[in-house]
Length: 205
Image 1 (tube, rainbow, N blue to C red):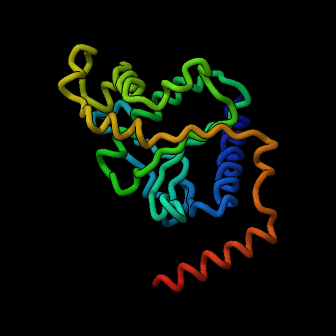
Image 2 (cartoon, rainbow, N blue to C red):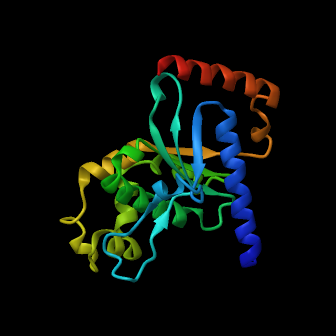
């Protein structure tokens, strides 16, 4: 896939994921390039030493309603038609979540992984686990930039076991499909619901 087409596909996936989330009426979201709020999803690797660029999540936002009310989230979006290298990207995502939670916990109540394809489906129940976060941080590229160690034997004393467990508990695995994207409120209904949400928000202030 050419670089330009991959970029366009990624941008299209981001906009589609944002639209789907917003149309559920359960979130208020923004993308990494938002003029004001975009900076909230940007982070730096603590031990990059010039070897790794800062990273950002694709989206950030806040949930609305019931048990999720006012909880924050950071989201990564992968517009892939099939598995390809999704698992490698997911492990990097877990490492990024670990760093973000340590730096800005108020933004990290939930971590959303959104894609159009599952990966390693037979191990799906193992993805959002402490063991998976541990594996992500043990990878050479991640243990260097996230933990500051070169050897796998040295990671144990450098990582925060409690934080790894918290990352695992906060992961959402969301797999969309073209048809699923149609199962949202139609535009007229959405705006009526939005009016109710805005009115209730005004009453609470």
